[in-house]
Length: 453
Image 1 (tube, one colour):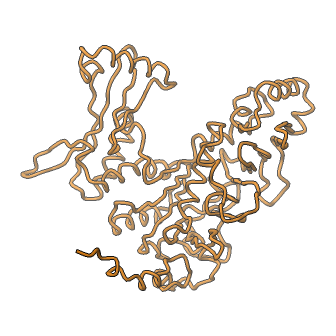
Image 2: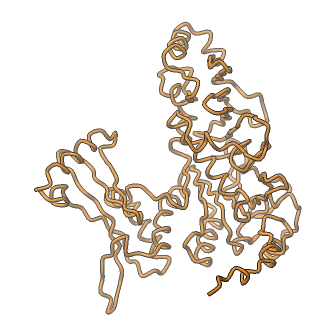
């Protein structure tokens, strides 16, 4: 579960800014939106508003690249070139998160510039109630020399010190993160590092406007509970969908026995895959899942069953569906998991290609459900969601560019509005900022650019 995300000198963020899921104690509305984990309160939902180019998507992008950085160890190219360009000061970039995984609270932060990671630190967080406890801290100087300090118990253990020497001499690099490296070690003093890494690897899920759910056809076939949820989820939108189906064929039947070279290439690729499974995707987002099961290799493809005239049933391929339907399919795993697991789904442009009334009812359902377990955080332009029956004031955030071109980030709760106020009207009237400034558009004389004939 996410507690806070800190960002500095990355994309449109200049000075250090913080987004958090910590409820304001003075607010008494929607009390079921507050999870209590180890007696620490956390919010279940958050929406982020802002004008085009204000920087709301940069929050999601930075968090997604941070996750990729941790899992892959190498600095993503997009992150290397992401320093805030309007500030001539050549300061370091900072990304940090505080989170809870398996009932343990962690703080993990990195400070880097170009291809040098100057600081990487992992602590058991005291959540402001007690002192943080060191798990590890790595430091790299300008000469690319790295040192690591572990917990006191680790440092006093002779075998652990041998491991530390081996890590520094053979594995630790100035331009690679070490959390994954340390988490994979079989050492009793590093068990918390394993748990922390699991949050990045499993609990945090980032969905962009261009990302798609993986292996949906496979999940539908092997998990009956998931299929029932998926069918009910899609049927509830009244799109004429009856069910989601997985078409299954043997690889040779799908490709053709004569295409031996292609079959051999795919088999080799599957053997290299740790899950013995690969996905091939079309430009439209349609995925074909190829999986090895025993001695057989199967191709699975998603088909969508619709009811037509005279109640006849027809199967549609994904490329025949609307963009809105495809987007809703991407949300199935998210809403399935946050109803029952402590996962964090972060979604950029949640309303993309979806009707405003539909997305509002979907968010309303999650908001009113007192039995959910996970968190959902999203960016949006959809002002219809600005409803205090759906959100607490501390669950609504705004981003806005300041005069220096840097993104500012703040919560509606900073304004201390009454719980009965129409926040949608206030937002559209510019009361909270973060809306487009249209004066220049009014002055645009586009007729003056007409070409002469």
